[in-house]
Length: 248
Image (cartoon, rainbow, N blue to C red; front, side, top):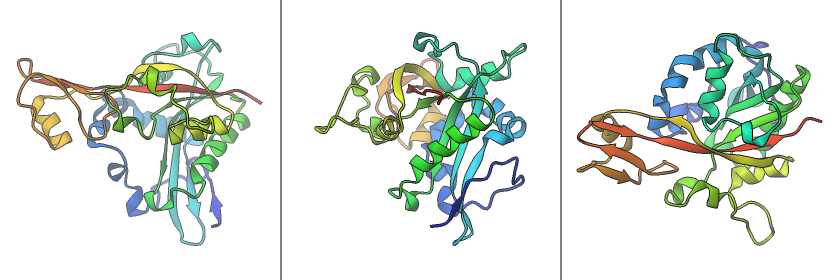
């Protein structure tokens, strides 16, 4: 497998994605309705193209992975990593008078489903770190979405991140991958992204009915969704895990 990892700045324009890398085939539908990302993701791509990259398979002439990141400011204190996680970092980057960045923040890494299990996720994290270091941002911070947490939606994230396998490595594969590359868990970001919507919208996104007000376990969600029929709203606040890859 001959792979290259060019940035969007190096190869601008539409990407020749494989059908299986279509984002809506990878993430649950409700994740595409975060107001912050709906408003600012286009600016991330347009204004920080040098931090967006993809994995190009020369042999098959197709894209098999994509990574997104944005420069950020962090004082190095784990406690100061924002509870608002990904949304907070993106909003801060485009706020008036935004501070000079000194770290790189990962936003997402996508791998084509049929290419998982080949070690590509490790190479994508390594490439993201390399891109940051080339631009003087040697520390990578990441609000990580644990791969298996949706199977345990009633378990608090603070408990989930303590689970370990018999060999001592992390129970969750995505947290384990970051950890193997030297990252450390800093804290939980309890509201890293949000997905507000009407009851009807949530019924469409989740493909299930919500007959009464209450908390519901929804496929793909890391925690229950709060439904209020009287207010006609559903609110999902997704927790992520702040992990830090310290500078070289």
